Length: 175
Image (cartoon, rainbow, N blue to C red; front, side):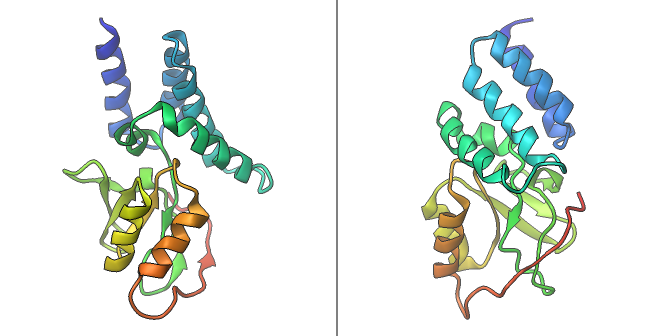
């Protein structure tokens, strides 16, 4: 089996079970063996950041590491393997969505997933321009790890029609 087929196998497994960090870690080991240390480190950092036991003080450092490691991969790959939280959910309760990108149902478009809770599409934004566009539309979004989430949230909120985005109530992740 060739290199491309092996990688395609890992990506297929992640499409079928997007929250499977065991597959991510085995894939990371394989990537490292193939000389792709930055993409391997990206996957390991994604797993560390998504772990329920990640310390609040360590999370910003891990997010910063993902930003630096993002340059070694394409946005489409990051949309498949990353586990960013859902941002700016317009659901009536106005809570901070506890779901992650990987918990949502895939659609025909790789950078759009469907949330079964609020029954809305969620858009994976890979640039500030995309963030602004989806802010204007009031869409639910997930930010590419290549973006600084505070800057992306600010850009989204500036474009969002109507009053400033309401304060969010943080809830635990539900899957």
